Length: 281
Image 1: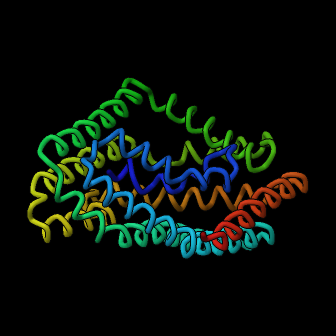
Image 2: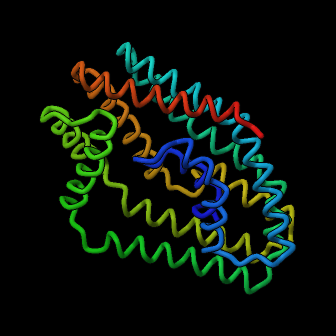
């Protein structure tokens, strides 16, 4: 459910897609994705549709303004080359807060739906989540650290190409340096995902206990760090700081053409989000 439902509201950020076009199909995208994980009965579907409609109105009216504001702040700092490690860390904190607000909004209406699952529906959901985990493990099985680093270099450079127009040799070297310095956390991440799924399965299996279900869902959705080892949390924090340093170095290396390309794309995104927030029907 964590993967299949709420995060899909960020579909408007998919590379190569129009923000407005993507957002207008967000309800369809969420419905389609949820259907891959669980088959609702008529009553559950009606409740979910009400929840989805209410959520989309709230998200479009209140949350898109927050996204626009955060991106504006980030864009100004990048354009003026005033982005600092502390500012980057705050950007990360603010991004996490978006997720927490979303979950807190949907939880009251989501809990009754989860509580009403039959054993067959619960099994269907857990089976699909386990399948996702198996496919993810297979994706990385047997890959060496060098292969993982090279793949990460390629993915990050592709994203930078989109936002900057093209990546210089200097910038590619900065990306490679970052991925070499980054602490390997793949095994820890996969283990964390497995533990998260175990905890989620327990919550669903004991879904008749409403208070306990809410408590566990809040833990899993808004405080998942409690399931991470101290070493994993430390490594994630270290990598977050390293990525912030990379962003600052890349910003300092931008050519006038790259900066213009980035500013245009960011301005278009911010304008789209701002416009969407005002287009409530």
